[in-house]
Image (tube, rainbow, N blue to C red; front, side, top):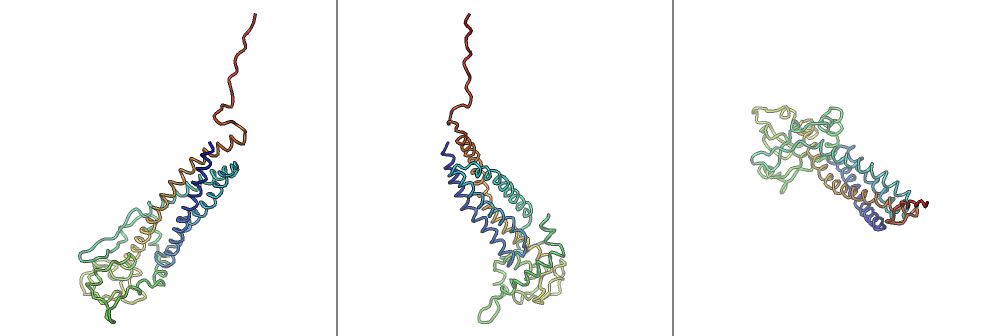
Length: 284
């Protein structure tokens, strides 16, 4: 039916438009990799998938509108692998970001982050010494901690005001000591020890030197993981919507491909290719 050709054309044009958010999501992750998350390899699969969907959607659109069997064959062949790749990326993103979240504390609007709350491949990669040197250097260069400072008439905000602030995972994990350490607040990135009981190695790792702070703390690594988890979950929602539309377009594309082949072979619609002949009677 020609209706399938028109429908696949519309769906492919819509898919082309919706591939823009996929590509935009990859670019957004890339910008966060340079400025916030500091994990620079995760965005490339999404960018490649977005560009591939754009190109293949145009081929499918042209093949459906002009009833070009070759373009429709290319569309169906390549789209199958794109759907598989996108599905694999979605599953991978949810698996590696499955565990981990911040721990709330009494009288604190922000949460604290602990590396032991995370597990799997992404945690091992981020926490590895060689890779963490690059990530911590990126966080330091982004000056995210230096941007936390707030003051009124030149006076830093009070401890109570700071405790009511909503901090990002990296601000909470990398720019201040863990709450359980019991350090005394001076300003956003300057805390002093009260000489109490130390509960974790991060309490000893914390340093008021603005070039060190808690960049070597496990809480900082956990903050990076929490930021990545939040970013990936946002992008995955868009990817799932695109995946559903791609599957619908692919199924209708198969019908359009069969329709094009029938037209190329001059086969009338709705008529069987072979008819059963009547047996001849023998006359004695």
